[in-house]
Length: 313
Image (cartoon, rainbow, N blue to C red; front, side, top):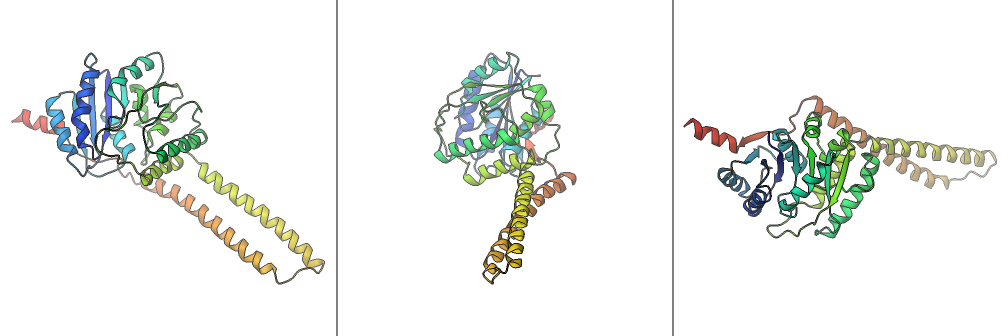
């Protein structure tokens, strides 16, 4: 068993693989570690770069997925292969410095299950900062996240917590959601967020929204509660208007102008019904796919397979 496992999802980052691996080896030269790089069906030469890095460093394991499942699915794949007493999760773009891993490691050894890296200044686009803030606020409700904890993609987790996380039968994983399902013994320390020096970001608004929806529908019934509240509110409004129109009818003040109100009510109520059905359908769809045992990830091959074949020859 290694002391630290480092899980890195890789997507179209061939420029960063070699330098990232070099920095990790330098930063953890006094620690027994393993580096697990999960190639999420990159369209560039990322897998070839991972193979080169793995052939040069026995501590590196490359995993090549058969289909793209998104960042959280790639991370979950790596967690299933991790054997460390502690597991670090970080991005592939060097905005998370490997030289900060020992800081997270020293902090979590004080008795914490998880330690997040808190970025006081995030060197990324404004819309990403806004999205992170919004996601954090919703997480306080959906996941019961403490207000002072920033859900950073750079973190270290106890190996025992990881063992529990990979047991969850959730086809649409959200890593931070899994963490909060297992433990609340969580802290954070301030870490510098570095500017991306090589390549370009693969994260866009659509992908960010997908991650947000995974959190919202995969680890919370809040959308169902909202749909219930909207339905209750609509019913109350409908009842009040029914009483108002009935009174107007009996006192002789009813007229044809009520047709406008009727059309508006039908459109509003019809829209609320369709939204509620869509929310329920989303949950039912996820249950259907999970019950049918659709795999969470499919591994095409690993760099260990190549090493085993070479050993046999």
